[in-house]
Length: 227
Ligand code: SF4
Image 1 (cartoon, helix red, strand yellow):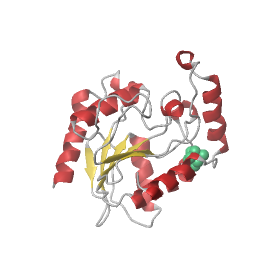
Image 2: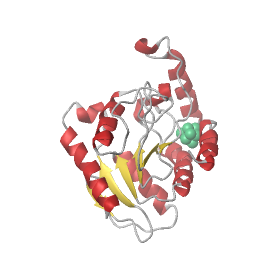
Image 3: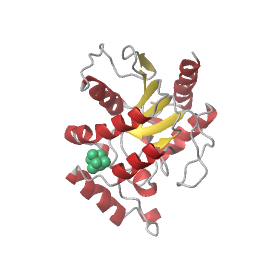
């Protein structure tokens, strides 16, 4: 990872801007889930992770309580990651389909993964003010990803967060509706935006998001970055 991304990572990990989320991430890390009682939880903000030369930025919602709030790496150690990384691997964007813990050998190719909120929120619902507090971290990552061509928003909240970040820069956006595999140009010189249903169990176990639907996203990404 480039030095500048490393120093940004250190700043993100030290962030305590949102009192409610600081308290919650630390409480979850203390109380733990039964299956992980003997494990040490990360319990801090989770920085972005991936290829510094990435052409795509994958944007999630927030760490899972017992996933990345436990492991310290985006989408690692929970069911959402178990659905995401095999799909990225099939598309050639991840070196392996599994993501258990940092140090497991997983590398991303041409992709960087981040989230609009770095600390686990109660009920997976960050407040708007907390998202606003956190978006500058994503903006800082984007500024360091020099080859960036597109965003993939995983879920409506990520989609809205990206729009919020862009409009806060004084850029007018066209009317955009969230949907699975909906594609938008954000404007000249800006990355494009592709939206996907979030790979949470709420979607994957109900059939709202199937493996085929999710693969279509990454196949489209590969077509877009090849053009
Ligand atoms: S959610 Fe973001 S801004 Fe808020 S404390 Fe965590 S890292 Fe900081």
